[in-house]
Length: 322
Ligand code: DGY
Image 1 (tube, rainbow, N blue to C red):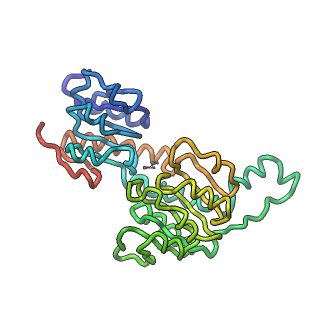
Image 2 (cartoon, rainbow, N blue to C red; image 1 turned 180 degrees about the vertical axis):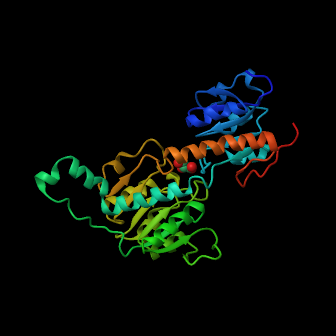
């Protein structure tokens, strides 16, 4: 332990660059997982957490000197932010630096789902092009589609911009209408689903969004409908989605996120009208490095200037002299 350097707890795994850069200003303390039972008496002076995953309330309670939690990721549903806010602990996330990458992946996943490109590549690799001839025509296409965005934050807007270039119509649903945008606004999610045939989910995983893409919304999307989820798995009622895909209530789905990651329900794996990715929307070296830098820079800013760079809205705190 170096004297005077603030100590930062890293529970579980995190991007390597975070670990490389933290020593610029901090002492790192590592524990295997975010578990309050792993906190020992000599950790009482820990002042910050850098995390890619969960920070439950009891872990915060076990660290009396905790001031700040730097979350690796724009979504911070793994951190009990209500508890952090009540205790005056600042939480930071990594907005902006991943928006374009996630939007790129959303478009790739949409096209893979519609045009079955992963299956077409598999056809070639298995020698079926030579043996059996051309890959079957894809029943679905992006041509002529009407896309609805459930969520229009920074990533949603980056997706919308790309969709415009693809020549498809764009509409959206958020809690309130956004000023200055030409996209059609729908005050309800079901209303949006009924008006479009392609629904892209990019809302944060919160209690308010939990399982909001349910059987009614899927039924409103209709039999030509395609669901894309690059937000959080918790937003979609997975059982209802499987049933809708099995029964032809909708035509297909492209999913980068799941309710119980890394576990994907067997029923989804068994379906041929889905494209499934292992939560890779932001997973390029360049973007993950930028996210890692923002995690470390948030901690450095907190302890040097007293203000985090990108605090989440629930914890707009400044560092008091402690
Ligand atoms: C995020 O930042 O929340 C993403 O899901 C990570 O890829």
